[in-house]
Image (cartoon, rainbow, N blue to C red; front, side):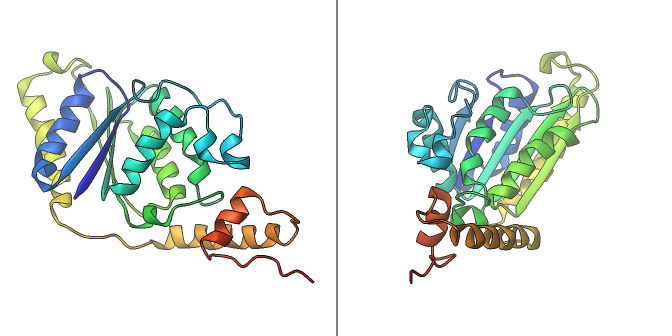
Length: 235
C-alpha cells in the first residue's frame, strides 16, 4: 500500500504527534511519502486560470503542485493532517486544495481518484473539528474520492503537546490508533453514490457545453479524450 500524507503545518506539535501515532499503525503496510505545507507549496493560487484554459502543467506553481498530485495519484491511502485554525483548516492546506480545483469533476477529473481511501486528522483546543474537516472533505469528494473518514479531537488542556498531561496524551494516541486500524485491511473502495451523481451531472454539463463549441475547451477535450462524452458530429 502506498500512502501520501499532506501535513497542513510544519510545526511538530500536537498535530504531528497525532499523525505519527496514526502512521505507527500503518507504517509497515507500505511506502509513505510526506509533504509539509507551506514548505512544499509556498504559494497561494493566483487565480490566473491557466490550468483551466490551457494545462495544469503550465501553472506558475506546477513544480510544487505536480509532485504532490502525482504522489496522490500513485497512492492507495491519502492522509490529510492539520490543526483547526479559527474553526477551519489551515490557510496553507486551503492554498493547496485551491490548486487542485482543475481536477474537480466539473473540470478535468482523474479516474484514479475514484478508488482512493482518505483519512482526515484534525485537532482543536475544543470539540469543534467539523468545519476544518469539511474544508478538506469537500475538495476530496469533488476530486472523486468516496471513501473519506474523519477523526478529530479536542485537546482541552492546551495546545502544546508537552504541556498536555500524559493521561490525555495516551487517550488521544489510543483513539487515533484505533481509528487507524481500519486501514490495516487491504481493500479498494468503490465509487459511492454521491460521487456517481456528481459525475453524472458534470458529464451532462460537459456534453451540453461541448455541443456549442467550435473548438473544444480544455475541460471538454479532456472528457472526450477519456471517452466519457462523444465530440459533436460535424455536418
